[in-house]
Image 1: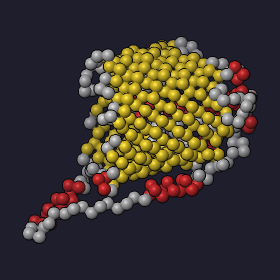
Image 2: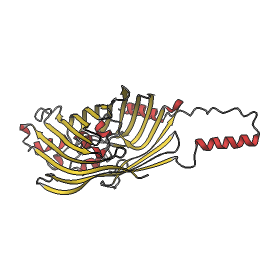
Image 3: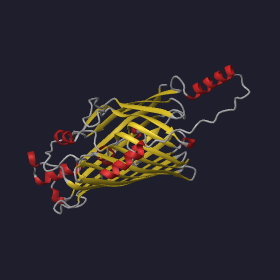
Image 4: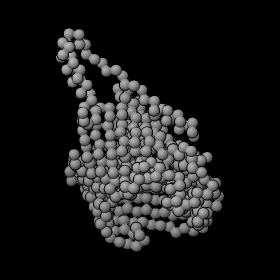
Length: 402
């Protein structure tokens, strides 16, 4: 694990120097004019300020009736509110900062970020034809998931994989190479969790037990992004390796596939994750409840696996009306615990929505939809099935402020 992460870090830091810029012959140009032209050329490539600044506000809110607290209730709810700031200094250097306004701004203990800060990074392109790039700061995990890559306000409910298993926004560095306009390769190094080893345990009511903090509590993604048939078919496939606890290594494979046309969008995300220690906490909570563990006996489960298959289909019925459908099936299992067994937990996530898009060039939609979630366990677990239902009427809008 240490050798793998050391190699990736070396790759990320091995940024080559820029190629020398081709200059126009100036033998016949007077020295004073030559000086002015050189200064003008430098300024055009290195402006005093960023060339552009873009500010977007993303909102989703509405009236809803649900049974989220175990009993039915109706309310007005702000589902999501985010601010995105981005811009380009020049063709080589860009930045992006995004905040979630309905999340905590308290710093997280491992990376000194916050739950409210989705991303804050710079991206620098270099090399011949600027095909290489390095991204540094808090950024999106380069994971094979179109559910995650989709605009978050479009997703009425995320699956467990995106919402609870993945570390979505990570502090780290990414080295990327554009093979051609349709294919690119990426290697990303990041902190396995946003909170420290001890805080993951203490904040969630678990004892450390015999676990030890990893000397390198980090991970790496290796990702291929591809496009075919004039970019109608897209792929984002990733392999991940990481550590949370010493001598317990995590592995995962995520295969995201998408079909995109002017009138429809279909994505299918498939993933398998093996966690040497279950820092995702989903399986650990159920296993400890099954065995009736409390206090110092309540520890994170080992050798846990998660699988998921997520399908979404969006179809325009006319120029202004569209339907959005989504279904996800996920399992959790314990590899070496025969009493608990494989796939002891099943999770179904689903929604259907009718959407009205009044403007062709503005990302505004009014919607009427149903959202559901069912979590069930194998009979021997003796854990009650949970059912969530929500009916909502509202709107979402990406507002281009600047």
